[in-house]
Amino acid sequence: MNKAIFLVGLALALATPVHCSYAQKTSPRTPAADAATPLHHAHSALNDIIVHDIFSPPVSSRIYAYAHMAAYETFIQQDTTYRSLHGQLRDFPRVPKPIQPVSAPLAGVYAFLLTGKGLVFSEKALDDSTQHVLLYYKKIVSPKVFKASLAHGQAVAESILAWTRKDQYRETRALRRYNLMKEEGKWSPTPPVYMAAIEPYWKKIRPFTLDSAAQYKPAPPITFSRAAGSAFYQLAHEVYTIGKGLSAEQTTIADFWDCNPFAVNVHGHLNFATKKLSPGGHWLSIAGIASRQSNAAITRTSAAYTLTAIALFDGFISCWDEKYRSNLIRPETYIRAVIDETWRPHLQTPPFPEYTSGHSVISTAAATVLTYVFGDALAFIDTSEVPYGYGPRPFPSFIAASREAAISRLYGGIHYRQAIEEGMLQGKKVGDCVLQKIILFQ
Image (cartoon, rainbow, N blue to C red):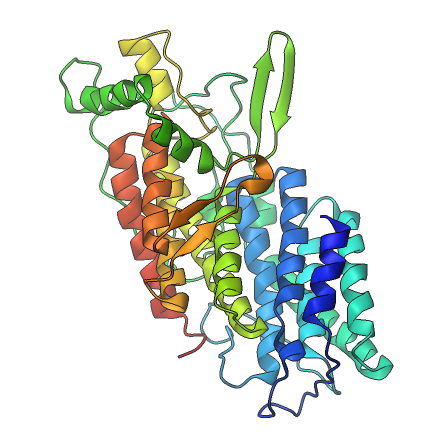
């Protein structure tokens, strides 16, 4: 993270001193008390670590969700207009309450950073950003409140981290290596490095709002066939035809929504990886953009991040359940074997089965909850990919952005149309489920 930008941003956000008490639930909030800039910066710091550590999209969604839950549960302890996740999510803990006056913004951001730190590899890399947050809060919070706030933030983080240890994540790390299915029409690793299957047991992870990973099982994929003129052949031929004649705009769309956290570049005998924002990271960036544009206070911003992260998390569970059930062959493998052995997709094919499209599922789920938070007519400029070399893109709504994200996978040559359309339906059901199970505010 650019330290100069971080320092200036926090200075502007926290220019007015404020002391928050655990008893001040109905007292007026000052601009500095509600300033969301520290939370945005904390999210960006954690995002940088997630990109650096190359977490897969499903695992990234887990880190984001727990960290934002920790922040949210801390912020709402001084705002009765928001509801706790306790009692709404299965087995969600009742997080500790402060036992003396605290600064909720400081405690919440600290809880976010400590929770994130407990879930990444490069733990020490978050220390620098944490110290900057603490430095600025030190200027506006009394020493006694400062110390109490850190203790409270740590208590909340420990409570959330204890809950994470019951979600089957550690157990899935110990499961045997995934064995490829040898049947015709099933997924197999793709060029250029033929990576092993990513998260084949993700359906075992505890969901937040879903009754089960298979709750929104989509329609089965079209029956595999190599026969020219068959329905499956036509699906693949569409990918092939579009890929051979991509327009400049289609190419831009495919690149903008690539979101491959570990794209491998091969030049002769030289291999190197390009690290990028994950699909979930992209949508949480959009949540941040919408929050800033709406001048949302820190608790509303936290609610937006949290709902989006929950939708992403459950979206990946739902999608990955189907991926490893249908285990469908990727367009790249089929087209090169049946239609044209020289064909290559515009984007690098991700290392997991094709059906359904993950981008289609999680983008629709995220757009559904963001529409609930900010409305269906919030036009915005998406600058999420600017740090990765792509220009900003304007969208009239979250749904419009999600539709473009979905169709980008066809342009990129990595998904059939059915996976996209069924993925969007699946994602809408997940997003609606999140909103039916969770009420954070009215």
